[in-house]
Length: 303
Image (cartoon, rainbow, N blue to C red; front, top):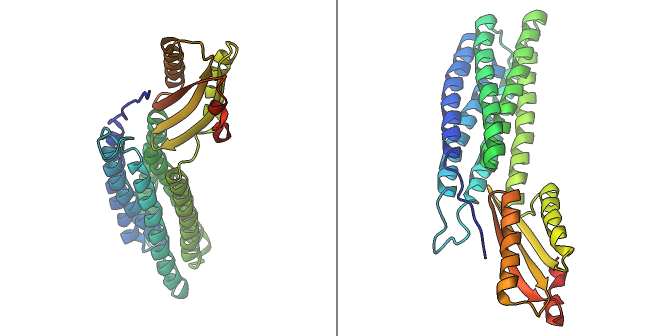
């Protein structure tokens, strides 16, 4: 038997919020670049374009992942979220390459920064917006168990630290007059973005390869099982995987062969409901077997 929880469509509203924030910060950062001519600020603005593309992809992925199971996708569509995080990772790497090219050119031909005060004020406003939205997305990702929202939130936090680094770089240029600091900061920004991109791609690959649920969640399952083991019930062939906001758990339940089908079914039902209550959004599948039959233990190696 399988129990499932439909993914909450409210996650899409957070992706829409991220899109709105990206549009606003793009305007602010390109405005700051136009005022100052800083390649560091240009790199920061490019990253906000990546934020917008990622937010659009997140909105699509969350919409698709919320679709119910159908004849061709009997386990649902929750893995669609990984397409969003993969695309975000690739876009981040493209943005990093563009930033590195622009910074390399400016490193060879340094240029003075103008109207630094007004430009930095616009960037700090954009940074505050990104920081606030990132905090909201992190809270939502924990509540909705969404890898898409979590990836978007961490990307926005990376953007926040990027902007802080750019602001510090421009401040140092203004104080020291060392124009070369501007493209150097841009190159450091590009390196940081590359790290974020590869990290997101790694998380995406892990999800697509059906990684097991986290250790603390497996401990929660083990605790529930231990309550039944005191009654002489045994378990093996436990397998778990994560797919977007959903978990899938399957295992074999071994009970005395003299039990009636009804009694065994009731125990499996109670175990499944206990796990689903402890870990909302989990599909639980059990297989009932007689503990005295040697064949029941042939698949123990799956544990």
